[in-house]
Length: 201
Image (cartoon, rainbow, N blue to C red; front, side, top):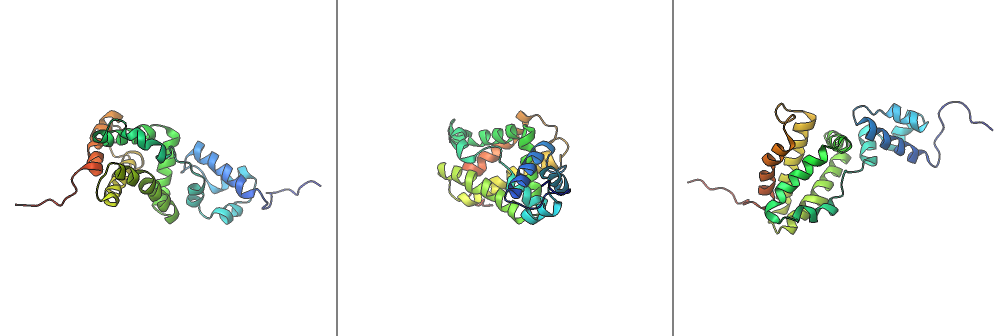
């Protein structure tokens, strides 16, 4: 018997179909231009089912997003030239990754979501600190791994916001090699530099 006209009801694959539609649209349209209504239309469901399964747009994005790289696979690459060059290589990795439109959409979308959604903030925190920065710092033998990781995370997220979201004049148009040369030393300090309190005379 033919199905009645209108959106299909919830079924065994509805959640998966919504997730697949969301993943494709976030990748192709970016976070700002993707809407729950558009995702529902592609998945052939009522918009209320999207919110039923995933809640907000931010939570849906966090659920379906794929990071542009796996942190566990790049640590050896960052260390290949020795501890004294890790900051420069980390800065280069971030800048080069964000030159890819899909990676840029993913990371800026995550940061936007993290600003207003606890789940997104926790995802970004785990990705940056638990999976990438803290393990890297421990391999380098640095003390205060948690503080160093937090400082690195603050520097990286601040850079992404300033260059790609706020688009600060000067930084937004800067040559990638210039940016790497500028932020690499600060990354290196957070990784291996002296974290002892300064003393005044």
